[in-house]
Length: 261
Image 1 (tube, rainbow, N blue to C red):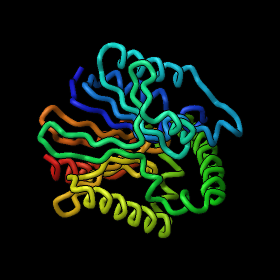
Image 2: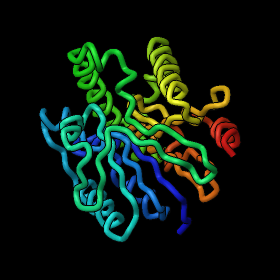
Image 3: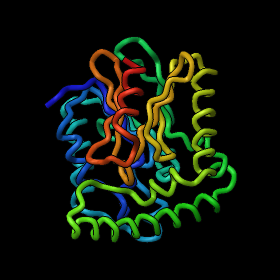
């Protein structure tokens, strides 16, 4: 099992039908780490208020995280907007799991990155909550349609995982502009604090992107793309797309990985 210094995960959305818990468990089995950072929307209380979908695989994931914490791996949980109820417990440690509103992590090479979920940079979530909830319901519908599409692809013998929701997001011009605005706001926050970059989630769009001397890093999600960020023992960051080709072409991922080598 490869050992990495840190694993960064966000937007798992436990408690929903869309959660790709089986793939996430496979990923965690493949990597041992010193630090595990859970950067928001780990549990989806918004969706669970409409109906809970909790599978054995989701339960296994929770148990695996608790087991990793007990054996000495540092586990830091930063709540997002879908699990914002847990922000009331910032500063509290649940057993071996620390809860923070945000966190500054020093990489092995000395660079310092701000870790937070990212809904702070989303003007819709902050100021027009009803629009965000409506969008969440529409997204849930896309996920259900994607489930039927995945079943059809399997019956036809088509390999690989393809996300309808991810495809729609990449094709809609306004969604792309929203992503660009979000990234700009995130990197601006890191620059103001005199840090070397930011690691966040929220928008389900995984990337490692240099912005001048800084780096914008997004973990992606375990709904559409099944992506994570890992920090290697030398401080190098890498984007891992686990069992999915939906994020971006392999050659583009390699360019981003090399930028932080």
